[in-house]
Each structure stands twice: as structure tokens, then as C-alpha cells.
Image 1: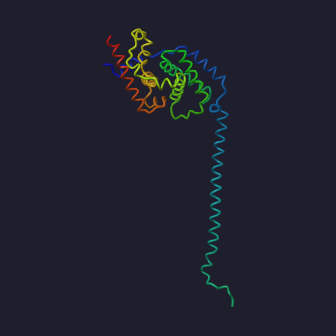
Image 2: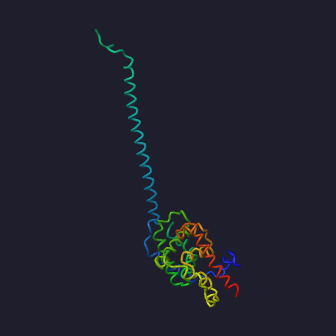
Length: 99
Length: 162
């Protein structure tokens, strides 16, 4: 009865032999060197991408801060108006009308 | 990863890739090397698409399998039926030659099952990794393995009895 380990053993025993490893790799390297460097592998491009990312993040943060400041200014103005109008409720009607 | 690092990486991975493709091409070294070369160049040019979610070797083998499918022709792969070959027992001459025994044993299997057994038994990949390489669910990989095992057992038993 053939078991799973026998199949494994069979595959290991009859593993195909890979020949000409050196020349094959040499040819591939030659072809790679003839091709342009992809953007993902260009160190300058990687730096540029990092800088762009930092600028993008800081710009987003500044936008958020500006939004918060704007909202706060509106809140302060509205509060100031509300507070300034509050005493009017306690002044009797016609108080300032002099006979 | 720089170009030099990429070359260093493929210099260690080219052997399992070529061995896998050699098995897929039934020992045709010229075709296997052509596909391997195309795979490595494609991997180099599209390195930006490697997201690091799987290992580099898994990604490389996935490209290799896709190049193999393109080479053979997807239509042939899809229409290939196991029923035509499943009962085929390789000739004794094929089995006598040491290097051909493996090719003879897996010859009756469809390409996807052949790829599954080669990756599982020869390259020691797990079913999860094989599912990433072949782009199919783990359940399908396991069912492929089950069917291929049955086929291989039949062949190995046949030659074990001699």
C-alpha cells in the first residue's frame, strides 16, 4: 500500500535537476540591466515618494487645524452674541423710557 | 528593494522556479527556461505591484504559473480532461529512466493538479501558499491533491509490484 510519505519520497528521489544555473542567471541579469529601472526600484523615486507623502500628510493636518480654528471662531462669536444678549432678559420692558 | 537586491533574490529563487516549470513542461528544459526568463523579467518590470502580502517566492511562482498558462493556452487547460489520461499508466521505458519517472507519473494529471502536486511534494509549499500561487481556494487545492494522490498511488503501486 503506497502511503503519502512514499509519494513524498518518490518526488524527492526523482526531483528534476536544474542545469546551467550560471549561464541562465547571467543572461537574465544581462536582460535586466538592459531594461529601465522600474519606478518601484528607483531609490531617488522612493525618496521623492516619501517626501510627497510627508507633504500630503502635513497638508491634510493643516487643513484639519484650519477647519477646527474656523469652527472655534464661529462658536466664540455666537457665544459672545448670546452672552451679550443675556442681560437684556433681566431688564424690565420700558426701563429706559424716561417720562 | 533595489535592482541589485532583486537580482540577489532571484539568484536563489530561480532554481525552484525552473524546477517547477521543468515539471510542468514535462522535462522540456528549453521551454521551461523560456518561461522562467519571461517570469523573471515580468517580475522585475512589475515589481511595483508586489504588495508584500505574500512571500516573494510565492509571488514569483504565481507569475511563473500565469506565464505557463499563457504559454500553453488557457483554452487547452480548461478543456483538458482527466478522463482521457487518468487510467494511463506510463510505459516501463519511461519509468526506467530515473529523471523521466517523475514526469511519467504526473503526465496523466491536468495542469492545475500537476502544479499542485509539484508544489506540495517537490517544493514543500503549504496548501494555503499553493492556493495563492495558483489563484484558487484552499478547498480546491485540497481536492486537487486528493485526486492527484489517488492517481499517483495507482501508478506507484503498479510499479512497486514489479
